[in-house]
Image 1 (cartoon, rainbow, N blue to C red):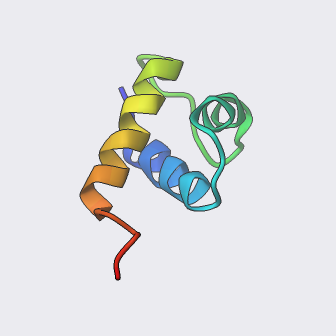
Image 2: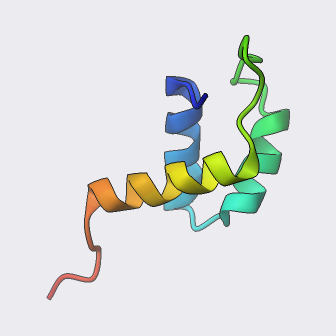
Image 3: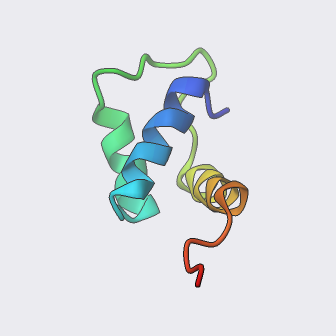
Amino acid sequence: KVTREMRDYIQRMDQNAVPPRLIWSNMLRAPEILTPVLGFPTCPQVLRSVKYNRWLQGSKNSI
């Protein structure tokens, strides 16, 4: 499960154009993210979270 802290971390990293695979590997070592009870999310879960955050924000290519 992706917790609120993880979502915030993923969103910050995605705004800096970090690929989802690196977001996932960096999240495992990030000191500000506590180890969740159910364990860390898998790489596909992080990828879905990135896609969902991008969908919520809408297109950034506006005219």
